[in-house]
Length: 489
Ligand code: LFR
Image (cartoon, rainbow, N blue to C red; front, side):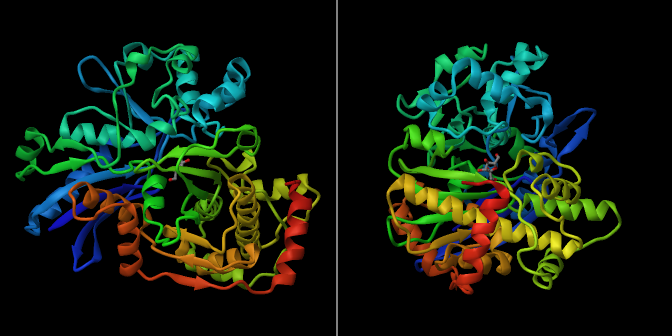
């Protein structure tokens, strides 16, 4: 029997088929498509209907190949949402979390409500694009969207609604809004009212693995297909990626590596205390009562944006070419803090890196290879900082780091990460989020017992590459220099 995972990232989406045979998972990429946001005037928006179109294309491919589907589920990036009007239709296109309409809003809202009240209620890190600040920005701008809105749906909720006709808010994504209270296990009405909205906008919250109905009749008629049961996965892609970490040890550190780098550990209850707030760690909800105590690190986004900037200037590089350029450049020429706000929004990243270097008294990298080297080394060194903080906050010591996600195809980054942290890196699987999505469906249908059996099966099914640390002396000195130049304590 075959199942289907839709895994939507901030730059591309894919539909993966999964089969479970004799205790091994086989995955097959059925369909891959770009997910390009569209700038309309001042607003950066998601092309949500194109994504729905691509989901339908995937279902047509299933039909043409005469595959009998047992179920499907969706996961995507977090925080973004659509609003549904009284007629059940989507009001406007969802805004991209990198849009500028939230500029300054987090500072304002956190100032008014106080950051500690928000953190005590939600356990969620302060990121300027959290849903709470996006909604507050719409409210402050007196957006007509909010006046007409009857239902709030996050991206996978919305696509699932398009597919099934039923509206639910899935838990792992709901926690990323910074409006959900994991202690009361419900939307936080006080926070919602404090930003001027009605708690009625927010619907019932369902857990990963819940049965969410099936493909609606009109869709089946349109595509000429049979209906299929739809499950909720851990619909936040990072939640699904962490489900897929092939650890056999219950205490483990992970890095989900893609456009973002998400680093932390899995805990059974949110860690909400002063230190967690001060270090700006988050407690995102996961599958089966787990929480992700982690920190967002800007990740390969900076490199992706450099590549786009060079492309606009007429120079095209593949990622392997960029990695080769970095490898051939001089080590440790300049350092950036990848999480500096300068790097959050789309734009001319090479110029911003130069600006950052000048601001911090460093000579900007002079070639494209040197820029790429600076980005990748700085990322690896930032990983060491965040791993140390994860150990401090969780009171655990980790013997190595699990890396999952598309970013592990960058073997240089994996090796440099091992060098920077002075511990082994275990890299795999690449399709972390999609595999996490698949196993939650198998647990729901009873084919896998629980998350620990799933992790063992993932371990048996996909290669894990080990990177042992090298050049300890050089990386230790680089770490000192990195912290000095970036001012990271
Ligand atoms: C990764 C991710 C992160 C979230 C960011 C924005 O794809 O989901 O976990 O902080 O995207 O939604």
